[in-house]
Length: 355
Image (cartoon, rainbow, N blue to C red; front, top):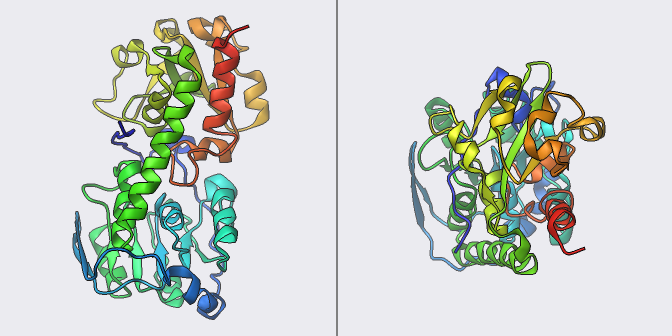
């Protein structure tokens, strides 16, 4: 069974700013379109298996792609990786400031450009976590298709971008597209639905193989959290969040206490005060930490020791912005990033494997 769950991401929530995968930055200068012109041949020359024109219906309208795109641009999260995974190197992509800083490519994205032998793209500035769109930079990149299936595009932004090139937006609401649907929508728009299906099948196999190698994990319960000492609380992720749901492919499950304490009304996270941490009962805790120092000191406080699994030392840590980004949400290229899911599996094997 494929790992299919919906995800909901809050963008612009001040209380959860550290939990989102985008952040504010100073605007940078876009590369000139001429610098990316050499990528025309590499971006989409071969590989389409579907017949054009292709029409995709989404929340902001209906987009018809008349012929195989040759200059693809992406906006938001995940569609860059999905395009690369099916063999198309976008000529322009959004910067991911939270993960790697301004005007830089996430490492798994940079690796895939190199693997495809493609020129690195123009990096669109994104100083307000998707709230504003650098239209002039899109014009300079000269795309013939803009993919934004996991983004916060408004109707106005969609209309302006549509004057530049056809735009594929999210299917239902901003920032709510399931991670696997990002892959499916992107592959369909590029005429490579068969390749998209193969990417998803490979991900399914990856998790199934890990589950088979570690039967001791079957049924183990967990709570995924971020500690916020300055607020005197922890953020607890629900099964609606992909970093939780994707791990169920390993055989582990979200702890019943996570649902019992949930105050999010269907959201992807909620907060729990330090006074209530003793109620967060699970076999183990996954802690998302953004620095080595946070990772080293996690669980040392009396407050966190109230969590039964923390007191028992049953803690798995994901360390650093890049590692955290690789699993929240996972993408077509990041699900097997060494410091993400593989590191989680190794730590779980150390906790529950045979002596």
